[in-house]
Structures are given as structure tokens and as C-alpha cells.
Length: 219
Image (cartoon, rainbow, N blue to C red; front, side, top):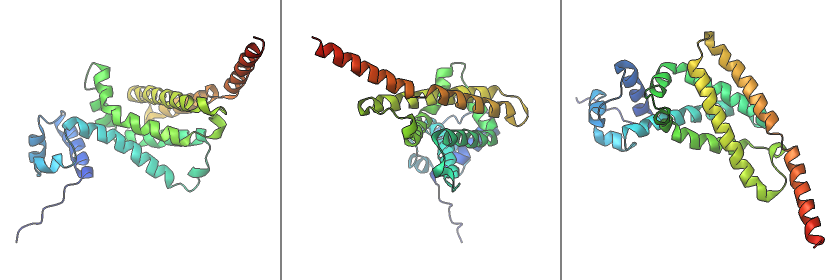
């Protein structure tokens, strides 16, 4: 009796790809060789991914999706303020990265050109910015609606830069259990939210509107 072929899924391809990198110390030379070494066909691969590079991008996006899934398992998460949600995200996300540090470190240090390494994070960037946009609360939202979209984009971009800086710190961290990264996260997130205090911005906008109105009326 023929053995039933195990169904190939996106998750299985991702898992096999990470194992391939760790076991061989390099990327597969082609989709054909990668598929053959894992007992499936190129057709199976292309049903989920167009290129080897798209698998790498999916892996980092998957780390984020797993992080958010874990966060929502906490019944108290929805009641957290934005700062606490961000801290929870960071600690959970880097815990997942630490569990896969050998792969993450190898893949993000592959090229001397850092821009090439960052290309693998494009899907993570999109998903992370979407997450940040979803947790922005009224406490950090400018009252003037016409400025809110600009503010949202600014917060998303600055949060992404902060995540990249934290990732760089974590990659260089050689402390036990990466305890220095935990301290870095606490201090950097605290600082970012102190800088994000929008009360002065609202006051500045109100003042600007007053000056504009006065100048128009005095003409």
C-alpha cells in the first residue's frame, strides 16, 4: 500500500527553510534543490511562494503574527494603554526571536551591505506599521483631524526605526538571557512615549490657527 503523501503547507515550507539554513549554513542554491532535499516538488513550493527571498520575508512577518496572537491570548491585553501594549509586543517579539536566534542572526548578518539584509524585513515593516496604527489611542492622537493622518504615519515610521535599532542592539547583545536588551527595551519605549506627548503639538497648532486668524482679520 502506498504511503500517503504529507500535505505541504506554507508553515511547513517556512519551517523546512529555517532548518535548511541552520543545517547547511547557507541558502539553498535553487528552489529545485530546496524542494528535492525536503521531499516535495517545485510546484508545491510555487503554490505558496514565488521566490526563495519571499520565504525569508514571510519568516519575519510570521514572527510578528505569532507575537500578536500570543498577546491576544492575555485577557487583559485589550485594556492595556498604548505604551503597555508596545512594551508587551517588544518583550514577546524578542522572546520569539531569541528562541530562533541562530537563524535570525545568520540571515541578518549575511551581507556586509546592511541595506541588503534589511530587504528581508520589508513584509515585517508593513505588518508592524499596521499593528502600530491599530494601537494608537486618543491620548496620543492630535485633536485636529486634518493632521491625524500625518501624525499616524510619523508615529508608525518612528516606531519602525525604533524596532530596527532594538533589533541591532539585540543582535550585538552577549549578556545572559539578553538581559541588556530587556533594559534597552524598557528605557527606549519609555523615552519614545515621553517624546510622543502631543499636548505641546496641540497647543502649537491652536496658537498657529490663532495667529493666522488674527492676520487675516487685520488685513
